[in-house]
Amino acid sequence: QPHFILNTLNILYSYEQEEYPLIQKMILLLSRYFRYIVNANSDFVTLKEEMDHIRNYFDIQQVRYPETFFAMVEYAEEIEDCLVPPLLIQNFAENSIKHSIRIGNHIDIFVIAQKYDEEHLRIRMLDTGEGINETTLKKIKLFQETGEHQPGLGIGIQNAIERLKVLYGLNTSFEIGRDEPHGTRISIILPIHHAEDEDED
Image 1 (tube, one colour):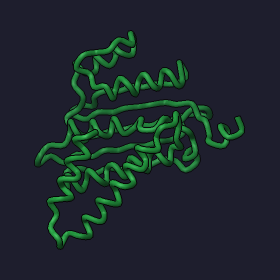
Image 2 (cartoon, rainbow, N blue to C red):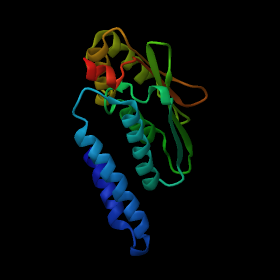
Image 3 (cartoon, one colour):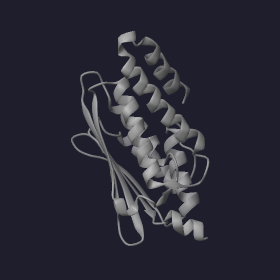
């Protein structure tokens, strides 16, 4: 994400000397962000690692866009060691920031992970932005049905859907929709696999 990196570095450069504490905070957030990105080369990470990364990402964006959005990231402690694909959630978090934040418009973003049933967990993401449009929804549905690349549909969304299919086959669910009068909701259901189970295997 060169634009994200360059824009963030430009913000760092623009700070005045008296804003040194803010510079320190941003450097710490960026170091955590890049450490996670560089190390996210495996098929799975724990839910706690992924959600902590999303919190960190929102913290960076709140420094970049102060007082434009509220973000809450929560997960049940009983599933914090469950394995999930790395960077799966970030793609949708980025879309909430990219497509929803407007000057003078405040939005709320919620990322919540809970146990869905005894064998599955569910990750939900909701925002109060403008909401995904019908054209994009149709393209997502068509891609889910055919697996064929859809022009104009973000690579990130298509990659996320494809990764879920490759990793879990039919034992997963991805749903995205528009809330009225505005907002986008996403639900991802994954089978529960604990880190300790993988170690035993």
